[in-house]
Length: 180
Image (spheres, rainbow, N blue to C red):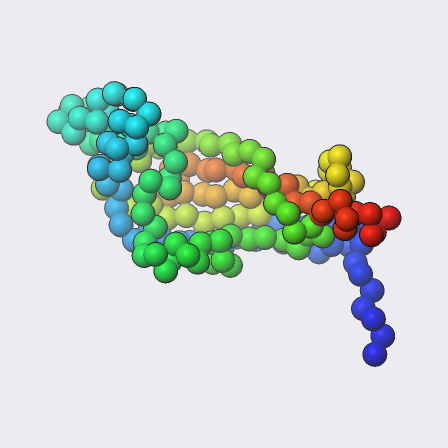
């Protein structure tokens, strides 16, 4: 049986680019946004904004309730059971195109907010592959850069925010040397 020819990075990129625009199915957080994790987070970072910490004050504002701090990680909100958390990053939560490398570095995130998240909101996310391209780095001249956008919406189907994530995928120096 003949040995299968290894694909070049350019051929892998061509396959990956066909996935641009693909989206995951929406995934809903099983619980509403809760006050207590917001309170603990704000106390941890020494943020005493009453909009985040004082339910009585927040109720009287135009938001009508405690607001989720825009720089707080969504990770302080529960996405469900330990079993669900163990499966995050599987196909229903993300889109990962083929890459020649198996090493990943999260390079950056950009957050764009459209409407505040209020205690009691129920959030849903879906992730879209926005772009993939080759850009060399010192150890891999064919490093892949993968850009995804995770869209958050609330129970009224209002766009809450978009998180743009830039992921660098590269090969080990040994794998690069073997391809030379």
